[in-house]
Image (cartoon, rainbow, N blue to C red):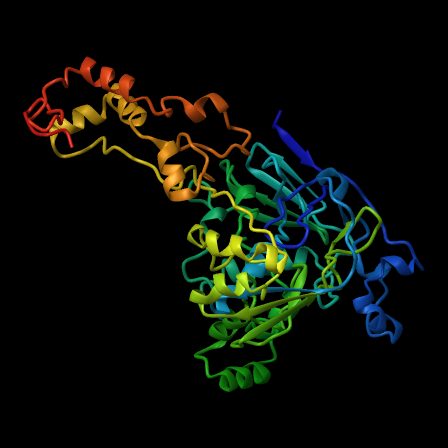
Length: 459
């Protein structure tokens, strides 16, 4: 029997921006008719005048519930503007990275669970069946359906004029493309002849591949669907070479710079590029709610101000931003700490996804045989590791804030083993010297530096 792994509706608690860890848990909810407390005040006037449907008509039949209690957090309040600084206009793409609305997302334990999807089923890592949320809509109110997946696959990914290099690598398994099927208006299936185990992980990454597109919007720029006269006029107006260039210019799901293109992200870009300041407003059709049924996000607007990268730390110190990561580095921590009390902010360290900020990688294929033999001897590598005073480096370069140990997976990873963090990684000069002696590296020059077997200094 083929192995099937079903996943049903789960919760993505990406609170507001990137600093919040994803937490997913199971739940279903539906906005109750007539409840005024769950309608974001930001949309109250539009709902009252009839230009926007009430919240009950804007949410999916089964929205995604953010379980704040699971994160030991209290529910938020509607409203407000979050200010942040960017160094160039193209950095508005971080609203896609930080908004983290994905077909599937990772929780704090790195498990993959549905987000935009209602559910998914995997069979033998070859067959992936995606079920969409009934009633889910793009930011312009148009239904989000299987047609958006079909349009991407048939009209973009496999169209040589729009994708000369063919579909992205995640769509290949042993060099072969999948068979794509529309099962019904809310269900699609990808069927490979060989396993494609990295497929789901790719959908959850920081830069999502977007294997769907708003067909109702992009169709007006596609030669197969557009009115020929209108398409020709747009090509001439935008001074592009052909319809494919026009389509690709408008198709910017990740760059997020086309204000007319619908999105599924929590905030919608309202500012054309280029600009000195970009304003993003809440998505009226966003698919997540809190436990009380109130539509997320809580924050109404995000304002991204373009600033000189050399001034980001100073502007942050002066309180000109509410949440900042872009443009800051560890070298700025002193000036940032100085401004905390005066401007009421907190400076928090963001762990690197890499195992170490500094690491040594002995070259096991070094051209000199004497060095190559040493580097390939695990005893030498262990002695080298024991001879490194990580505590001194931490105090000297990182103000004692770094995690001392081996270059390995982060402590938050389910693969982390505490014993391996410090194995052969605690400074012990005496033991390191004894290990080098055991390797018969006992000869020294007049300065006390050990000599290699060929008589050259071991340095």
